[in-house]
Length: 324
Image (cartoon, rainbow, N blue to C red; front, top):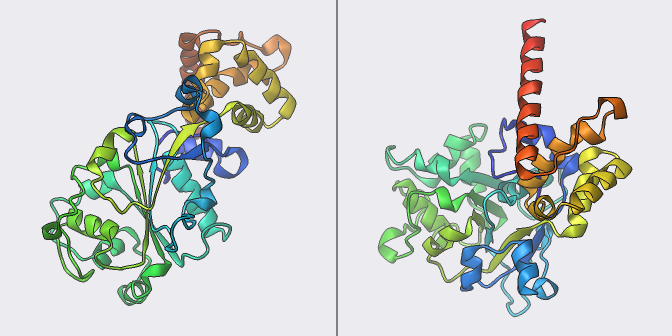
């Protein structure tokens, strides 16, 4: 869904380098059956091509995630977005948060709260807490009175839970592991499960991201929509190259070079790899001919050049900060 690996949004140098606004490229997101064994293994654009299934994919755009299912009068509330490592799940979440904050997406939600499962793990040793306390810990600008007012309108709230595969707890939806009142002070994992199951804040919406292998821990039959990010299709790869290089002609030349290399081209379905490959190609396609270095031809050469560029730029930045 975007150009980056699944990395934290806040303070991430990759995020600031690539840019959600200038270089973000919409990934292929397809509707899936949560019971599909292949879905649990993780589909990619390449696998779909091999299976001859690309023409049968129902594409889902970001703004359509919470649309009403055709066979249901009830709006979709619980959405699961799956995808293999580095395919762009967290970047998709970053884009949703950015566009919601700028007023261009999901404006029916008055508030969007983002929690990362790996950060929730750190609260295991904390005393029991209420939902309001959990939110206050992450969103310190909200006063308690304001938050209590916000929670009175659950249908206007979206909770995003990112990275289910990193969660230490299984989402247990048995009645004994759920609470009915958001004011109850319970272990955080029970708060999370109760939020997803909507035993309190009935009507709120939840978006969960997960790698395919963690879906077996999502024991819930009431998921309204299950979609999977499968990566860049060919036309999206070309679009990404053009955006990355900032010049359509240069981006096209770089893309045509990669097209001739079967291995490198096949790797470009993954936005993380696509970004690394473009970064390695940059010193060849954006410099004057006399300053150009040879373009990488193998995976090894690509990653060596990528690391060389990082180390070189890091040394230059360090010298500048030291006043050299």
